[in-house]
Image 1 (cartoon, rainbow, N blue to C red):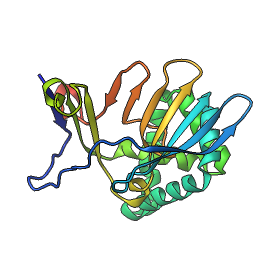
Image 2: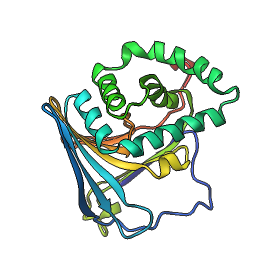
Image 3: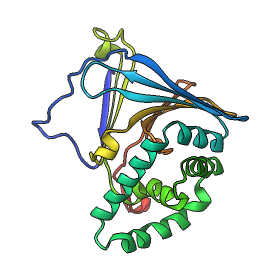
Image 4: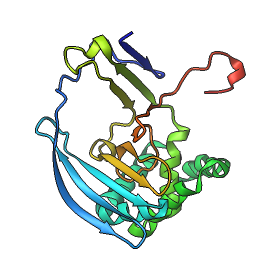
Length: 238
């Protein structure tokens, strides 16, 4: 068994253009550091020479709040721009504007609250405090994907599938076939978390977002998340 893959509620078109970029090792450039008494962060750029593939690599240390404050201080201007563009996108693409957004997200916020670990809301609060951004608005940006259906794919190849190219090692892909607006496409990032307890892990995603849909931990456990069609009615709605 060498290859496995899965689609969400969609799949590639027959004439879809494949990604033929080779797997390369970027040049890592140090940008800035932020230190506090209890945590901090280090910001690097991973510079590739092929395509639009240069992106920030951010290491965060301390408590959830410490990590939020560190990212907020290191990327303040970019974060505010990204969040504003995200919220403007919601306003422009939601019939009824802000009233409909409130109607959708306020109940979602209330129902989700008991299930959101405190370190997540602490991290959001740290981001809000460091940037001066409205906490509720930032929380809604994170909750919005829970109200929308994404189209995603994941793929794993190992053994015979990578014997001639990657020494039989595992290659994992998680494609977030989601919004392609500039506020996401221009803000890819690797965020490396070094928590006070538990395993360090990497969030393969975007700046300013603490949710994780693709990641890998220090324990060599990787995660790819997609939606799934329910086998029967006993599972409830998707």
